[in-house]
Image (cartoon, rainbow, N blue to C red; front, side, top):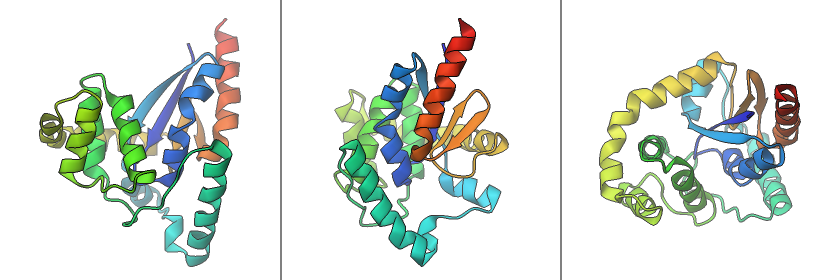
Length: 198
């Protein structure tokens, strides 16, 4: 079965938008999704890229663009009070949740909290509450997060080695698609991969 690898960071609004679509994209193509947290700041540093918000004209346009995409997808999007969002603790918690088979529901809950509910996902208390919301021991989840430091660094490094320079970074095999606006190309690649496997 074909797989869509979805590298994401909770600080990325375009990762949030993609998070609302990737499962449906994969299902339509008869594929699966592998959710893979990574540190976008680390990707930027390694590749010399930078956030659009750092360029005033791009930053202004990004707000308009995000609103357009949210309306197209029919999902809420509220820009956070603090941006970029400090997301490393949440990303480590996501990997810790993955060790308990709850990576996807936890990540979806964090994305909603950050981009639909305007909650502070840098807060250990908020992350513990979100963990509990998806059936985990929230306090234990946050306590387990530091042990995921190296795993998160490795996953970030892997994405960079494979060509990622932004988020979301979507892979079908070794073919890279960057941005939620490339999901249609990713879906076509998934269909082609599935057809080739028959």
